[in-house]
Length: 207
Image 1 (cartoon, rainbow, N blue to C red):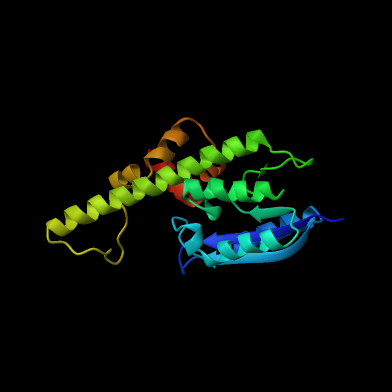
Image 2: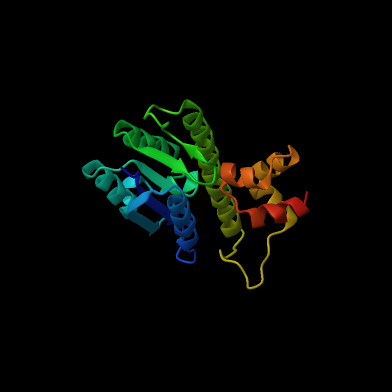
């Protein structure tokens, strides 16, 4: 019997498009000769709880009621930027014998015999911690910056043509800069931090 899989894709804002994720995951499923039984996609912040994300909630309900072998996602942060939710979803799937596959990293939570893949789960746990830390740092910096700006009588919102200064870039992407200086490839930094390669290339020019 062919392997039955579900595809899940997520973007954060209405200005983003999840079709690229879906396309890459479909291509992978086709190469592996998997049967795609269902696709779920949504526009929702990765910081939201699972219960607040309709498509992810529907996915979990579907796998609980139907026979599925794997869930395919593009990269870790697409599932959740909340570390507890990320790990809870993996546990939920593992308990039902369903493997989670992350295309960008080539990681899979279960091995061919259905046993837990300890290396993959360890790496995913580390990546999810980075994603969670990044979310908290950005939120903290934004709140602090907005508060200070308002206290000075400023209005929140970018002016037309506004571009971040070098100092702002270095502050926002301090973790990425550290990894670049260590010689980590941009592709791997994207996997760890969730920052696009284009953004990383811009960061690389200022350090």
